[in-house]
Image 1 (cartoon, rainbow, N blue to C red):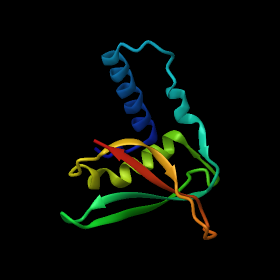
Image 2: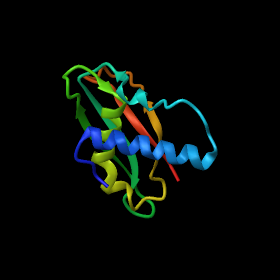
Image 3: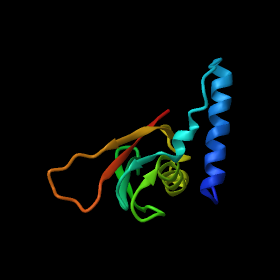
Image 4: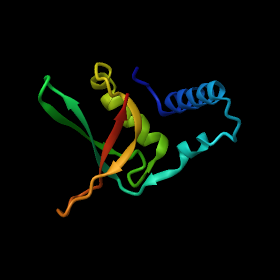
Length: 121
């Protein structure tokens, strides 16, 4: 589902983490405060993910994200914007569970950092 606000999304992430911890019997400090931690010091970034167009054809979806404060992204803002941008495309894929971001290395001088979303099943 799409979320209408960053606060709503962050609350859903906290609830999801609590359920996973409970199921796994994990007892640890709540580290979801990391959602407010700056993770990318750039005003804009490009995010990619692989998707299958047909049985044999793979395509790359991409979005350009802009930081709300004009200079950096928190973990929560990055996840929120990426989630909302790709959620409709991912629901039909086998691999649709978020596993992280990977920095896309390039020899070309690009205007902003590029990341690929790592997805699993």
